[in-house]
Length: 212
Image (cartoon, rainbow, N blue to C red; front, side):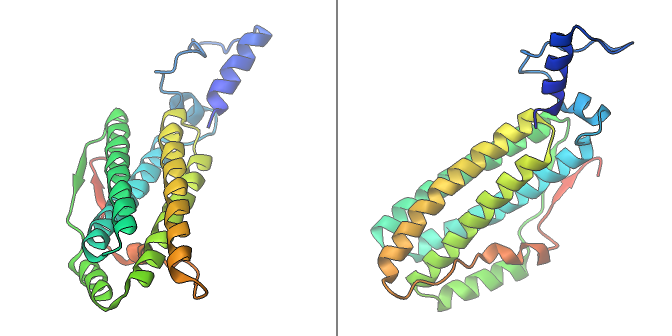
């Protein structure tokens, strides 16, 4: 993530410069460092937009899912944690949309596909609270791992900061839901099973970016 910043800092320490180019101040946190990173073989603008887009789709989809989990669950502690997850994901969506606009893009959305919603609602009707906690745990685990992986792919410090914050929050929430799931399951603990595995099949739920 810090490739361009590190390179500019190193050049400054060595007293070197790049002919025909004025390098930014390494302490300028407002600079769009990805532009230099792109020039030097790092993440392109399109790479960054694709990652933000993918993260937005995941957070919006799971935000919708957790709102439905909250309606279904009766356990008081689960309700409390799910409420916190919803608040966190609303914040994540806002942060990602802000970063998208900083990149010069506007966000427009289509509704979640009716098939995906129908599948989720059908599963919710036939599931018990243990299965719901297991699914919720899987959703959080998937989101945290994806955000962490995306952060490692980019040479854009600003986007990486957002993704790192998302990953940290989701890992903490995953731990809380995991503790709750294990406490409620006793000896019948099963591996997490995220409903978000279906997201790749939801072709009608995607972000449309003006320059894609």
